[in-house]
Image 1 (tube, rainbow, N blue to C red):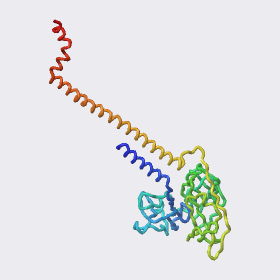
Image 2: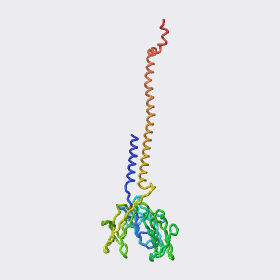
Image 3: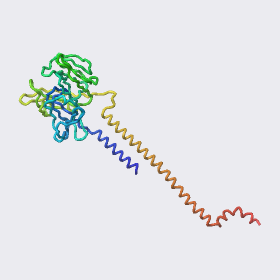
Image 4: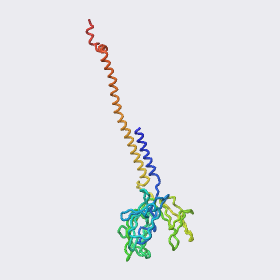
Length: 348
């Protein structure tokens, strides 16, 4: 019974872990508008939590100079976007989305500088194989100024348009990037992250000679409408492939564009999420099996000595009456013992 109960509890634990690991996880990420990691002082920045499903209870949090704070003065009132109308250097730090528990999104490092040059790089991780555009901007100046770009302190190249395109990025392109403009100075450094997993994608709807405006559709179906003319698709998969178009009220509709989603095949990389979950479940099951065998063997050896001890008193109790009977009946003893001793006396 003890073995059966222990095995049942361990089996339920394995089943619970299997369901927990195999269930789809909600993808939540921090959205930053404008989509960059560096800002000039007095720029306006908007942070919001985006993702699939219900977002109730998610707040924007930040860590500034080692101290964690929330966007608003009270936790209950901080579920909406976090807007910084006039950013200062003190607003530089880590930002992320967090629920009331420990569930949180990845962090984003935002830098606010008092200098004259910033580097525009994407907030979200870049998929392997994609192209990335880096822009070097000077405060209150056109963006087509000659700029030099650096990665991890090493010179990459210069561009007369202030832009550099990194083609077919890979893991080797991860690192700290910065840029400089002659006579204006140097930008802070920002980390470019490259990933081979499914990440979010941003679609923007733009009107000619005007900022982005709302509107986005897929395969003639309304997908989303955003006040800033952007739509984010978190965890892009094959089901997101299709013809996309956007429309702006009073301006018309864009041409259709096909969104192609590639499946990256990784060789000699067994540590993908599915394999990792399977390994964890198999390891737990193996542990349960070993514990069960140990309990069975231990219980068997535990019972055998008790059975032997129980057998000894029974033999003594059965022999005691025999001895007692022999003492109470001397005739029988004499008979059994006199067959040899009495024979000489009977010869005459």
